[in-house]
Length: 199
Image (cartoon, rainbow, N blue to C red):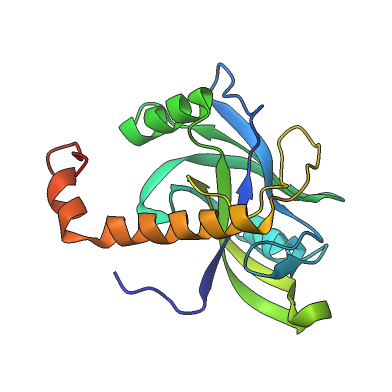
């Protein structure tokens, strides 16, 4: 699949207190305003407003995907809105499909704790220290992901201290390693059997 070079991702973290409700509802912040993520970008308040209004007018939904894979929708986002903190989302995992059931189990166990948005930048400016300030983005999807980029985005509404530099580096290395593994011939051959043996 060819990747659009203008299509970008931003990660957020659910937080340890995220739970899947009885009706498989999940909710939290997919993006926080004013927070510097590990890519050095900051999303400005109001960045999603135009895109959300356009989608509402067209009657089109922002997709809920598994790990940004367009072939793996795992639920539906019923509510997306901006508030003073960021982009808040609420949706339902479809546990009738295997990946949705797996996602619900992983969240309940604390093994999956991230959200990531897929978007295109419409308007940005340069801020302090060379940071990119995203002023307007076109939102396409919000995915459940393994490795978050913006650890301060929490379901509880509490902001915690950002991780130190060593943790940021480790997280970036883990993200790179997981992408490389997913692209490897070894992973492709093993996933056909439904398991991956440790080497």
